[in-house]
Length: 405
Image (cartoon, rainbow, N blue to C red; front, side, top):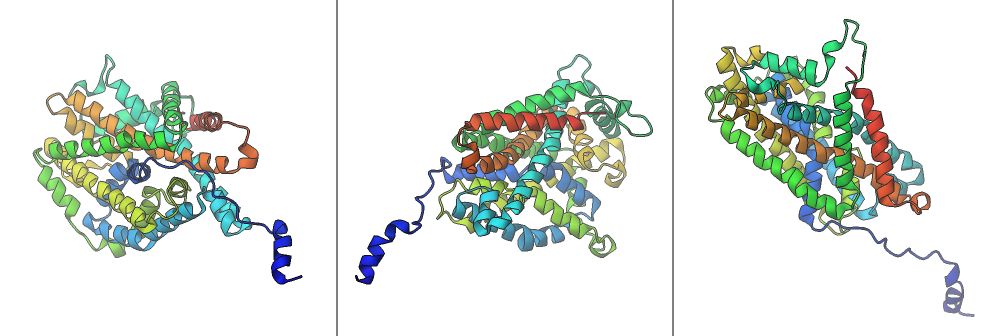
């Protein structure tokens, strides 16, 4: 018997390559870009990035930020997109494809993202609360408001910490925020449950409209009195902070990690619905540059508003003493409230924040859902909509932990 005959006879015992998986695809690469950029661009771009610039020497923060982007963020983003496209799977199956003992790495990444979105959703619920509060009979924004008053209102009334005692222990559930959190999770479910083709079309609005609103806000902010002083502060560079405040370096790296949505399984999951031969490096560059550009433009809008606010309150920008979420809620609504039709400007601002948050929120859920669907032996008999509903409701219940005062 020849070697060829032996090969033919034993061919049935050979493990032949499996046929390619039938996987749902994005309707276009543009849809993928909008979804991925929508995941990357969120609250951190419009309040955390400007607040870090505000705290760490103005333009000096750009140096560690750009270095972290080029040498850490972008390479990891390229890797995640390339792995997602090649394996056409979520994080668990991607790392399992590298080695079966690495599945835990993928599992830990989506677990971290799932835990993170339970409190991220509460931030969106606070924005929703503030938005609907503008329609109340006792609208806080109806009169003249200072930045410190706006910040106190947000912390005490919207978040609900006004009833917390000196020991800072929670005393009650803020039921309004529980309800608004439920509304947020219903929206998240509707954005994810019908597949990536629908999700991609939704992100044309949830990502596209905030960009339009940001440029409208920027155009209005730079025309305000004192805006030039704020922009000067934004671009002012105090290089001494690079050595005197060494924490600026890990802060910049952390901003890149959170802002690009890397190491949460999101980009891997989104890229898994791309064709395998799609240009991974170009995809990563488009996402990273768009994300950083949004942050940079947001900084102009925020600091122009801070300049106007310092002008009407007769204080220097450094004396306004805002940080974190308060930088946005203590500046933008106050400045917008002084304009003709100010209440409508404020509502538009809250709509922009809601849309920025919602596509970041449902991307975390998508990463988890993709990994569950990839586990075909476990999930074969469960409809994707049912799976999505279960993990959505579980996340909402977990998010109530952050709805206390």
